[in-house]
Amino acid sequence: EDHQATFQEVMKEASPFNFLLTKVTGIPAEFNNKLSVHIKDILSVEMGELVESAQFNFMHDIPWLMEQYPAEHRSKPLLIVHGEERQGKVTLHEGAQNFPNITMCQAKLDMIYGTHHSKMMLLLYTNGLRVVIHTANLIEQDWYQKTQGVWISPLFPKLDKSQMSSDGITGDSITHFKKDLVEYLTMYKSFSLLRWKQHILQHDFTSAKVFLVASVPGRHTGESKNKWGHMKVRKVLGKQGPQASFVKNWSVAGQFSSVGSLGADQSKYLCGEWLQSMLSAKGVGTLYAAKDVTIKTLKLIFPSKENVRTSLEGYPAGASIPYNIQNARKQQYFHAFLHKWKADKRGRSRASPHIKTYALLSPDSKNAAWFMVTSANMSKAAWGTLEKNGNQLMIRSYEIGVMFLPEYFVDGGEQFSLVEDQSTEATPYFPIPWDVPLEPYTKADRPWVWDIPYTDKPDSHGNAWIPG
Ligand SMILES: O=C(O)c1c[nH]c2c(-c3ccccc3)cccc2c1=O
Image 1: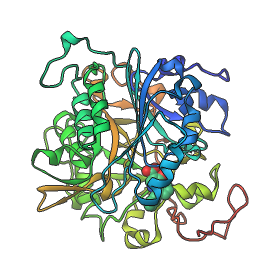
Image 2: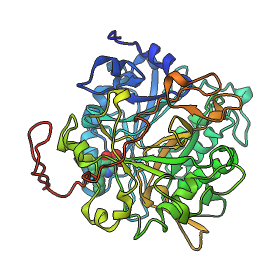
Image 3: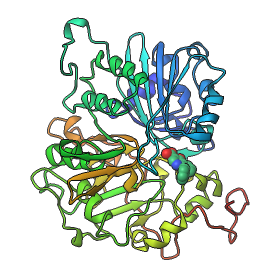
Image 4: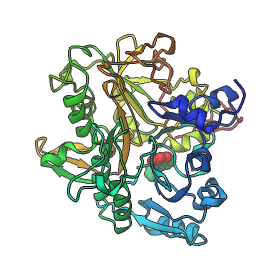
């Protein structure tokens, strides 16, 4: 339908998963009316009367960001949480100098090569608090013609004083979302976030049905080893995941917009460590030994050169897909797992993916046992890498995402349907961004690499790509 859905209609349709995509300029209206939001919708007065907000991100264009708030909200206190240092920090502060309502919080990055990737909005209203976890930088380009993911929490009402307890966390959900979010904020050791920690403690998060999956820089040992990165996934799936017998022969799907150095062969990190966590299930630690992993077990979705060339933005979309030739050359094994970006169902096959999503897919790809949307790309820096004989998880970056498990949305739920007309009460439809079944690269396809030239075929704007 072409009528502009109101935000209330969108949020009603989005329930109970509240997982939406950003609106894309240049695709048919119907695809922007279905489970889609723009940043102005998220910050609109329809969501509530704002008291103050916090914007966690990697890139912030502050004058542009202020434009996205409705006029009556532009003077409300705004905390910018970033990881900029040196000139980047100077430039960021310059952008903020005309806005007296802005406070800056520089996340400490003690691990070299770490970045503050987390993308989250904390929105305090007169009648409650909302958490938005998403994948888009706070720059115009990221909200224009890309595929981005957004999880919008329910409105968490204020706890009344009687419900508050001095110790411990009251008003949490069975997924411990509130406790995990408070612990994440605590790791910044920042005074300005102490205030937001208080706001969160004072609100009732019992309606939060997702698990928080986050990363914070450091060398995590003991209990903390399982609080972050891929080891949090391993813990959640091992305790509350699908029954191992139910998901035998299912495959992990990983979809991302950048790739780090994963090591000389797949058995080390990709299949030997990271995949072991993603394949974790109730009852057994893992489902496959690393040596048994085949391209049946792991399906990776990453834009091919052709995906980028023919995208709405053309080759410039590749400026946000920073896979470098140095890493690509060292890990040809990785390319065997690759599938194209295809999203016809959502009208976004040409909206270059900046979203990052992960799932456990049934052999026929018609069902999923869990789904995750996160800022975390396919890299050790984001997910962490085990050290000291598996006793320590080393993470370089801040990341944040949410994980959806069926049984927290449907009593006894075991799987989501990925095909809308085959969903039932017991197997609700989950609106994934990409098309299933997945389409493997052809022999001629190459993964997008951002630091080599492409002059053989012009892009959708008639241009070549000659990196600086
Ligand atoms: O977290 C995010 O969203 C992103 C993180 N890094 C990006 C980079 C980059 C690549 C190497 C070194 C520093 C920055 C380049 C272009 C887009 C992104 C990006 O979008």
